Length: 204
Image (tube, rainbow, N blue to C red; front, side, top):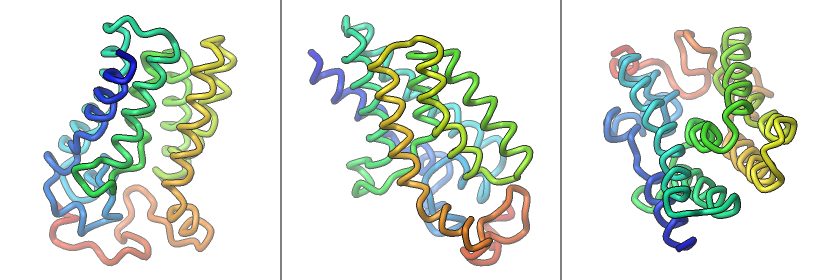
């Protein structure tokens, strides 16, 4: 039963909503990342918000599925972790997926709601202050394990949050390099900072 929950979580996580709603063009514009942030760069805000909500929802759904199957803390965390991995490494896209931030928030919105809420608030404040989505994502995810621990959710969830944070940091390694080089794109900027000038697609 636990294996079924993990497989189900992975399949849920691997659903590429960014490509389905944003179109294949998002692979060739902006950062090329199939996630809500890049959809925002190349499509309307409403489309990006829809992708964001769906990516969060699939993470939450993976945990709820495991709970419905009678899963304990380890099983629900495993299913949630599988959803995050599915988003980052989807079999349908040759294992080249998104960065896992929204799906991670979805997982922990069920496993550790107070911790997820505080991290989401920290994300919003950081992005509002710095105008860097990548910085907001990193700050929020790196802080998540501590918030999970402090809210007393349990060791399994804390360890899972730590693993998710490491994966997200790894997936942001190119963003970190651009931040270090001063070429990372600020939200609302006119250029994509080292990734090419805006095209007609990026202005839609």
